[in-house]
Amino acid sequence: MTARRAVTAMAMEFALAVEGDVDADALDTVMEHVEADLRWVNEVFSTYREDSWVMRISAGRASIQDAPPAVAEVLDRCEQFRDETDGAFDARTPDGGIDPTGIVKTWAMERSRWRLGLLGASGLLWACGGDVAVSGRGPVDGGWRAGIADPREAPGPQTPVVRRVELGRAVTALATSGHAHTPGHVWDPRTRASAEHFAQVSVAGTDLVACDAWATAILAGGVGFATPENEA
Image (cartoon, rainbow, N blue to C red):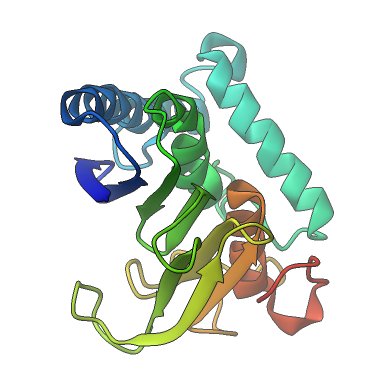
């Protein structure tokens, strides 16, 4: 039996599907805590709130040392991916600020995964937008199936699917970066202008945050940048 729950945070819907005999009250309680986790992440990392730690640091009103340790953790990962992608993934904005949102959502999803593990489900799918992580047995021949939305259509529940990806033992994460939700939000590291190489890029692998970073890097840098041993 599949149970489903969803919470809204960071102006997005985060959806959970769990397989197995899971207590409904326990599921509701866990999701309440997950929602609180996600709201805290938004308070710390939002680039739309002037009082967030990221905006305060970017504006020079605070230092990384002043902020919660999670800020340094995320920025360190951003630098790691910047090195790995030859600069295609970059949390530094063209005007000299910082913007780690290329991985913040998936980092937040992974940060809450331990709570989902408390449910004792035989399998789970944890998703937000085009980013999906799975574990355990799913309802489709023991695995999970995720759809990649058509970037040419308006985002929404009725958006056509251009490809379906089987997720399970070997491939447990899928991340998608594109301009459908926020046009022009990814810039080319060479021109420092909006990236126009692709409308959308999806990367599948085993590390959701790494898939997210590489999807953004390929969207930003185009085919001239090296790609990981994942599916793009």
